[in-house]
Image 1 (cartoon, rainbow, N blue to C red):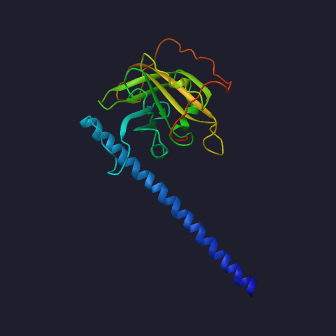
Image 2 (image 1 turned 90 degrees about the vertical axis):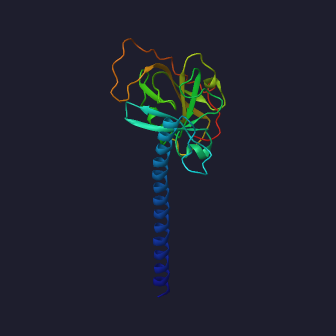
Length: 226
């Protein structure tokens, strides 16, 4: 009798725990979906007015660009700053790097298992597009991919021409986030882009710089783990 009662209590506890975890997951998923709607609305307001529009009143970040990935038909709202709180909602623009669309090196960071998961499938020569706050749509071409150490900040160096540097944690299938390695994709500006994912073909070849597999070189140190 006692064993049956204990089994019943254990079953009830298991069901309650399962319901709790399900409810927690549903809450997180629902919050993320609502956040994306608010971010896109804030970006639309930013483009219309050319000024910072916070997605919600207490937010400590705001949209600064919109990143398009033609190969996968994805797009992401890029937020100001690269703190852990910011990266929970989307790619972050690293403070101190060039503003999106300006001359120089614009550094964006995001999580390897969410927004920047597509980087593992992005080849040299692939196109990226960036929409700026003044409504310009700029096209970039990937010219380099490499694995680096987190401690080396060489990929943050300034550049003369508009450059996109996308950084995430590595390896992509690591169990624990963070770690000492970073995966870096770099792209140079190519031309203004039509407001469409249908991209014309480009002549010429883009040559890839040999990937640096020596982990004593290269890397990025950021505010939030990716």
